[in-house]
Length: 366
Image 1 (cartoon, helix red, strand yellow):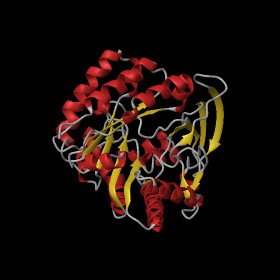
Image 2 (image 1 turned 90 degrees about the vertical axis):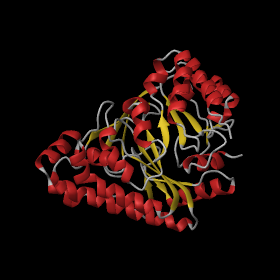
Image 3 (image 1 turned 135 degrees about the vertical axis):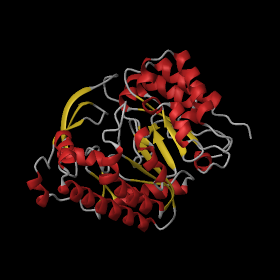
Image 4 (image 1 turned 30 degrees about the vertical axis):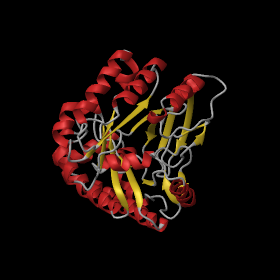
């Protein structure tokens, strides 16, 4: 039975054979543990669906990229600068980590009239300009065709941070906060520009010619304790745009997945109303009990396990916690997936404890 088969059944509450899970180590973790981590991925292959010997996957658009380690094991510190396709300047200090925006091209509203969004006909822009500013449509469609021919999930994607984060990248957080306070009309104009741009990107996906399994879209809306903005501002500035984007995505894909980092509990009524099938949300930022109370059985939950917890917990705590998460969020019909990104300084024994616990607890009685 393929990962695609189980994933689709879980997302549609069709009693999957097991709970699909995905342990996704960041490149610095692969570069640190190398063959030892590859050995874990082989022994617990059910937890590493995007790993094949010699290949690992980092991105939606690069399935099964060849493993490329640095000459030196461990975390590699760099000082790299690059522009993304929207003109934001990024600085990265750790190889394999996204970095941060240090120059906002729309720091003054007078620059709005000269703002040029990327050409949608060229391809999909990446969030930070890495590994390239834009992934061509040929590369995207070839990847989708390859997935289809190999019986894997055929997915479409938009760059992480489509609206909320992109506005912050363009304006800067301070300017953005003042825009909300001042009820700035140009903020609405900018959001509408971005919305129309993403709708056009989704339209181009229709050229693939066949129904897409999964459309994945991401935007981080919260801190670890609360959303960046309250429900009133979210509804006024962003909700209708997200709804239009997800409706368009749903028109060409069987399932739509929304990745959201941070606490989004105060925004949950809006998320419930969006045409989204799968919510990829964080466990500890929102509280597992809260997630169960609000979303269990209503939306498929792709639970994002806390990177901080995985880095600093004892292996026994990890095993106990994963049992608790699964018992709390799974339903008799399914509707649960598990996603775990791994970052430094997570010990190797914690990664193995996670894989061991998942391989034990994701089995479901039929």
